[in-house]
Length: 480
Image (tube, rainbow, N blue to C red; front, side, top):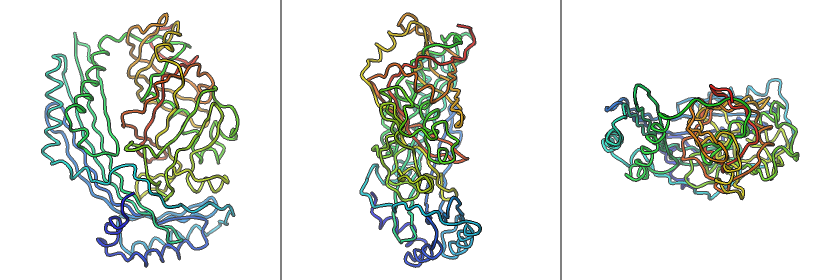
């Protein structure tokens, strides 16, 4: 974990705030409350976009602020401002105390956050690592490289994004925790044309690392080559069949379906309110034997990792489903307290302007013992999805709809023609019970996931092995 002196310099030395006085204000304003904290944030971010042979946009932003939250019973009051001053924090106290009206303490103890020595990623600022002109050169190189690779390339888009976020959390007992979180991401997309038909392909990667990793020729070419491969493959894609059939999900990024269709349903707030399809099912068989789902924020350098969450609770490795049995939920402090459970280090917020809520970090399924090629060989007729697109899920019913950006027909145990227009329709809890084979090739995604919930976005990771689902509804353009 980053030396606290660095964070004190950011939030107190530079701003002129007096730390003991601020801690005293927090203690006084939250006296008698069930929970709460002062959340301090300083963030630098940048984004560069290169499109159609020229720099399309470049932005740099510096922001800072605080959020003061008080929690009493099931209610919370929240005040925030971009002004890091004692006067602004004192003005926020009245809002924090307003939660007392009409609310009573719910006497359910939850242990205070404890210190951690986790150091999951560098604290270096990636924005200061590489000169601005070198970032532009990188994006221009990607454009020129792809156009030289194939004459069918008509348009190239490449973007580079970076962020450096420092946070410090002060609890009413004067406990202070903090973290410095770098984040970078490289995206490449390409449009190709052949005989009047245009198709696209895209690829990206990122994590809590420095820019240096992605500026290396080997790494940016890997993303460029993958984007081009997908685009050229789609030129030969045929319309997808429709109907009920077996579906094989590939490893890695296909775990986004697991994240959306199942992960959100395991978040504590939905289960406390009884609105999740998984509510009241702890200890019950909710998936096929062999299915183990984990949310782990402690993976080194991963996009979804956090040393501590935004309430000061250390991140952890949480087993949610073990061998098909539902064993836990993803919890922030408020919902954990009300449910009589342990906070799991998943209280996350987009920025100081937002309240924390239970959010996933890196969510994935453990691997099994089947070879991916054997799983495909076992399917007489079905669909293999190698890469997923976007999707939607209804938390209450568990119903989901997802598109596949790369998919193939499976006939007699062999991969056939690439398909276009594939959508997967099903129910998350029901889908878990239809898992018939789990591959030995578990992989995490390349670091591009962003999760939205209640208007807030946070970086996440997903992953899974190759997996056979015995029956899903495939939406396509031809009746199977």
